[in-house]
Amino acid sequence: ANSWSMKVPDKVTAIKGNPAVLPCTFTSPNKEIITVIWRILKHFTGQQIFNCTQEVITSAVCTSKNENSRYRLVGDPRQKNLSLLIDNVGYEDSMKYFCRVELNTGKYETQTGTDLHVITPARILNLTVLKNTTNGFSLLCLVEGKPLPKITWIGPGNREIPATNSASLVSQLEIPPDQMQGQMQNVMEDGNYTCKAVNEHGIAE
Image (cartoon, rainbow, N blue to C red; front, side, top):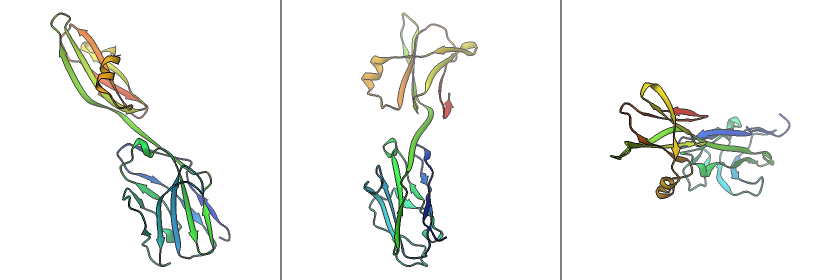
C-alpha cells in the first residue's frame, strides 16, 4: 500500500468485569520502527492511556511505557495490528478511545475513535424474607444490571406478580446505580416464590 489508512469499529460492547478488546489495524507505505499510542476522550489531544515502542522492526515485543497493567497490546504491530486489551472493564471505562501509530516517516491517528460501552446482564445478588406476623411476610430481591433490570415475582401456580421498588429501602442501603431492589409485601400464601430479573442482555431467576 502506498497510502496511510486505519480501521477501527465505531463501537465495542463489553460486559462489566470481563476483558474488552478495541480492534485497530492500519496500512502504511513502509515497514519501520513503530510506536503505538492509545488515548481517550479527544482526538490528538486526549490523555494517553497506553504507549509502547517496537524497538526493532523484526521484534514481536512492543516495549510499554505504561504503569497501568490493565492495558496491553494484543495486536502485533508487525502485522499492522494495534488492538488494545483492557482487563476487568468497569463503567468508568465507558468512553471514546483513539488509536495512533507513529513511524519514522509519518504518523496516523483515527479521527472517529471507538466508543466502549460497558453493560451488565441482569443477575440476582440477594434474596431476603422478612417475617411480619400480622400481614404475612415480605420478600426482597436485590438485582444488578445495566440497563437496570425489570423485576417480577413468580408465585405459586406460576403467577407473575409485579415487584414494587421500595424507595425508602433503596435510600437506606445506598444501592449503586446499576442495582435495584424489588419488594413484594404482605404475602399471605405459602408456596414457592421466585424473583425474576430481566434486561436486554440477560434473564436471571
